Structure formats: structure tokens, C-alpha cells
Length: 153
Image 1 (cartoon, rainbow, N blue to C red):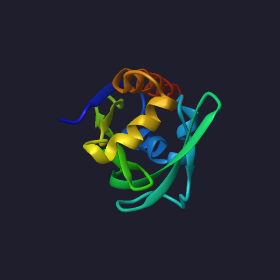
Image 2: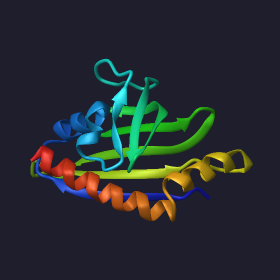
Image 3: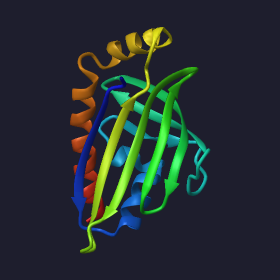
Image 4: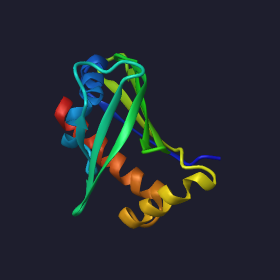
């Protein structure tokens, strides 16, 4: 069974606005403590579009290759993350109109590093981000969602 983590927040802004902020992956560095942005993006991303994710932790920088799986404005945005031929994770954002003009955003991370093939990428990941990945990602997600809320409101 794959590890996964979800966190949510209510943002006092319309779902389309919040979606547009999240789906503009070039801006992810404004809210994420680890992701710094993206390259290879021209206009709004649609299902099947690739992009390169840029990340950092302390002095270490790395990139990932990503593919958009869902891009339904105001409802859901999801992408798979790979490092070379190795599956790493799936990131998903769900947007729910609360009925009062606010949006409930749920951010979900799914660990796709499974089986023997995943051992090199897990080992490299432990060198960059030691410890429990679920705890690490949960803390980053809470910070990301709070910063997203500040930007949207």
C-alpha cells in the first residue's frame, strides 16, 4: 500500500482564482518551502502536458519531470512526478466551493516509489530529505496551504 498524506484549508476566494494560483506551477515557489517553480510551461496546463519541477532543500537543488493528469479549472489539478525513469509521487489538489464564496483546498501527496526499482530513488531521497517522508511532506503542505491562503486572500 502506498503512503499518502492530505491536508486542507479554507481560503476566502473563489475556486477558479485559487485553482489558477495552484495550476500556475511556475509560481509554486511563492508558497512551497521546497518547490521553487517550474520550466517548460507555456500557458495553462492541460491533461498530458509535461513540465520540469524545480526544488531545493538547503544548498541541494534538484529537478523532476512531471505530467499533468487532471486539469479541471476550479475543481481538480493533479500531476505525476518522476525522476528520470523512476516514479516518485503524485500530487493532487481538489477545490470545493463552500457556498459562501470561499474554497476548501485539499492537497494530497501519494508516494509512487514502490518495489525493488524504487530503492535507488528512495536512497537518494533519504540523503536529501532524511527521516519520515510523510511527516516531512505534511509539514510542507501545511506551510504551502497557509501561504497560498495569504496570496489568494
